[in-house]
Length: 172
Ligand code: S3P
Image (cartoon, rainbow, N blue to C red; front, side):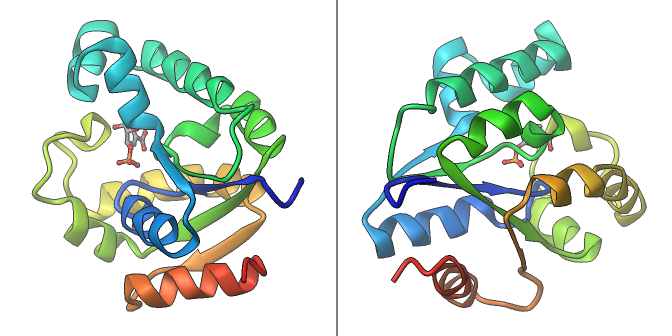
């Protein structure tokens, strides 16, 4: 991957992708996109509405389109929806011009960060650590296989996470 490439942040809902993405944008002067936001804009409706009306596979197709649309961009921090790398096709396309960084957090930390949100249809009616731990375990292999770098976020500030990432990717 060229030096002008992108950084793709992946990981479970509430792992801190958006927050870290803002930090990197500001620190590195990169552009920033969220795949969820691209989809909301393209479809003209909220994620929850897409899930309600068209169901999850349709949403996953939207994610694949979003990744393809980013293939020719450079110096972008891409904050990926939590389920995006479950499709191998998306990982392959991301890897063409991005380094993929997995952010992890314990189920307890995740619950603390997402519990007041009703914007995550995958967790609707399942706001508890047991369910989060189970789903996280189910996804673990795909997350780890996709990642070029893994950063644990538990107990760290956004600055610590961002600086660790910048250092480990030798971005400065
Ligand atoms: C999802 C994560 C969400 C969003 C959608 C599905 C998932 O993004 O794409 O609700 O399957 O993990 P965040 O990880 O940004 O919450």
